[in-house]
Length: 130
Image (cartoon, rainbow, N blue to C red; front, side, top):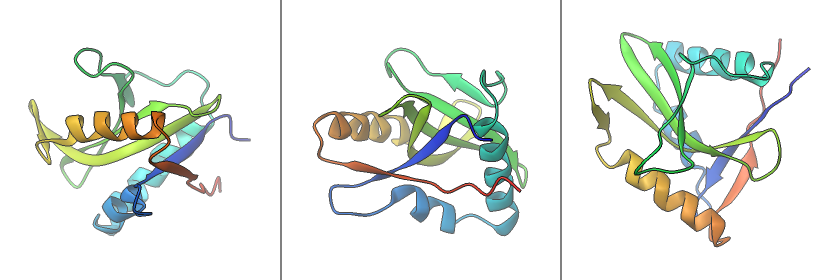
């Protein structure tokens, strides 16, 4: 039974930016991402290695973290809009202190602000628990 729901950010133009990122991943990366979401959906308190709050200068943002195909993947998002929901704002890669795309954190912050102004929306990402 899932505790958490994961929401995809939908741009004001109607694009599901998480689907766009996801479809660009290799099959193994997609599988590892789905496995992470399955684990986190059932976990009340997320483990430190799988999630990290970013803090200043990105208040309210956190990153889901997983390794696949020798690359560190990050999905930047925020809690809400409802209880036990996490909205995924952008998918990216991370190496040392560098994010790819380079503006991933600023983009996520901008999308969070758009949601607050109701200029973007969210859609639930279906997770097969099997």
